[in-house]
Length: 534
Image 1 (cartoon, rainbow, N blue to C red):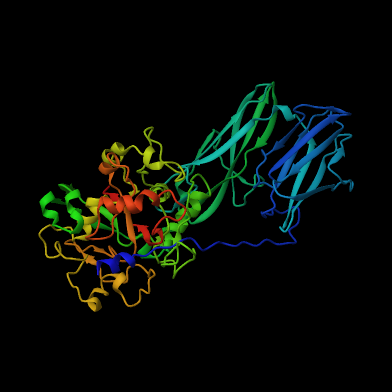
Image 2 (cartoon, rainbow, N blue to C red):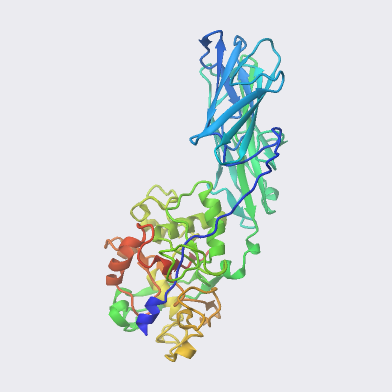
């Protein structure tokens, strides 16, 4: 029977991709975000045949998300050239709207502004249009090297979480020096044009007002930076900084529910005697109580956090998958609906994702390096970078993985000596397959060697009335084991087999699971969340 359970633990890989479409008739005055965006855009000014070093500047600074620029050209220039392109095979063309002149080099005689329509066409992709308004100015006087970002460094937040983001900007003075001043704007479009001025927002940091964080929406902040030299001002704008607010309550309750695990104490001898000496590894355990995900992390929750984290400041080696089947490792594809558990991920993805979810939800990220910085890239050797002492002692309130002791304590009913503590399976001591299938998905007649929707089986019921679903038989669960991580190389720990868990399993399965693209059995691996009580 145990073999069958091991074979029927489930998981999957990513198979959903969002497709977007653009209006092919988009006019240049609009903003088109197509796959054919520029990778570089440079304007060079000339006085006859002499290149004027620093003779032009772009406002705002170049970004592949900006399609409308002002080009300042030195007053002694009489022509300028455009150098633009992409890393792909592309055709770049330009036309001056004022006089119909075409090409990539234009005369600039007199003080009249020029409006250039720049078109970029990558093979087999849609066209992208840019507008360059070329004016006489003081190109060398504007601020340089402008960087803008949001803190916390996630870019999307759940409303009602109490997060008040700050938008920060840095900029360098030009060689001529000067004094920088700032004015912030907010926009409902991804452009540094036409935004609403934020009264009193004149520093290098803008702290959002609480009222700006209470509705689900996406807004863009940018800052106008003025450099003043000898009473003359040169102005440029940053690129827009995107901030998204989401309504967490629009997710299914199964995706977000956390339940209270009561306080308790377990002596090493009270764990019981399972197969493979599992409980000999647990030792004495004491907990003031903690919070635990009622269900394994669903694809719905994983995907919304992953998308917003990866798009801004996080990096992931793997994307995860909606549910799983015995074919998932070989043929990644979505299984079932978005309430299937996320699968096909490594330990590193799980802990970095926990940090991202914490930042989105206004909580303190748990997994940090020795400098106290949250770890945000699962492509790094996260297990080697984590300050485990801080994880255990700092008491951060963010999302994390349960420890092996917490997992067993909850799965066995969180009541040593209680009616359920010595049951063979979480929630039941029945061996009859027809009855067991009501408790464990792996024994359900619906299973067919693939995952199901979480939360459909009979739960483990704790003394305080909390209910935990799918503690076993749906997918295996990544867990934390900090003391072992400091002593052994097998640091990627998995807790789901109720009575068949030991270090031999770890060395066979876990040593590869965080590293390989699709490691052994990762189609059957998910995870469950835990949190310290506030």
